[in-house]
Image 1 (spheres, rainbow, N blue to C red):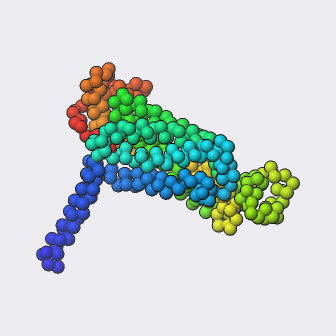
Image 2: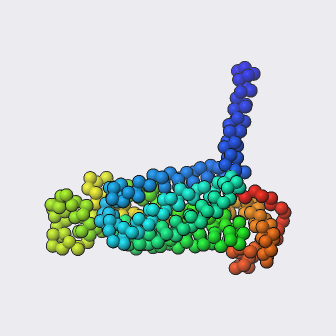
Image 3: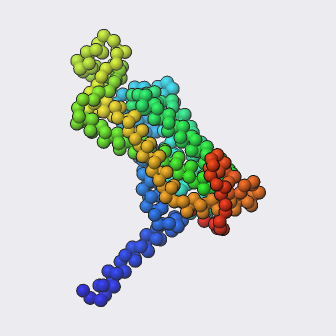
Length: 339
């Protein structure tokens, strides 16, 4: 190996590190570990939201791609209003949300950050109303599903309110924490889809699982071939209001069997996803105490300048509710507000 080759090999990692550094500093990140996390999680949120924009065409794409039996309920009455509100608000919110976590935007376009933040708050709260309107029929509307969706509505609403109150009190460290929590809670639905499909495959292999469909749902699914319903589900002959146990089979050629496998696992998937996201974001927040402390210093300086009582603790901090020792400022934090 020549001397030139050795030098080129030695310089390759340095060059790669230089490119990586330029990439994350371009967006305003000061710490290298934040950039891949942003790419993964913000990228997932952006990709999922963009991919689902076609669902805004309710009578077209959504009707064709919704889980079997879903459109029977969602096509009319307050369910249609609910799904319109939910999709029409949460998808734009998912696209707008990721820009709140780009440090360069916060530093150089603060007005955009504020207006975008208010718009996201409004969109998420309206989408939560829509979610509650349709949850009775979402993937069968089982109690596990209703409980999970209700929990997500509560925690995302509380997270947004906490973030809003803290930023109005210039408690930037707590605003960061609650916005991160809320974004991760909202991202639960992405992981839910992955877990649901995996679980549907497992329950199909086991082969002994069933989900409930009404005869009306089955007739709607097979409206072009009602004789199939009469032959396959004889109980639907006498009373169309009957509830029928449908075999859960993701590999079936019949849509109700595929729908049953998804319906069966949705409630479990959303609870498990929420647990993973809730624990994951708390792990991240606890692994970044220096950043929280730096932003608390920024909060202290801003609150001191405004003239708040107890600068550094004017927002909703643990010292106001628990038995923690009073927080004391340590050093100047400067103007860096990057996450």
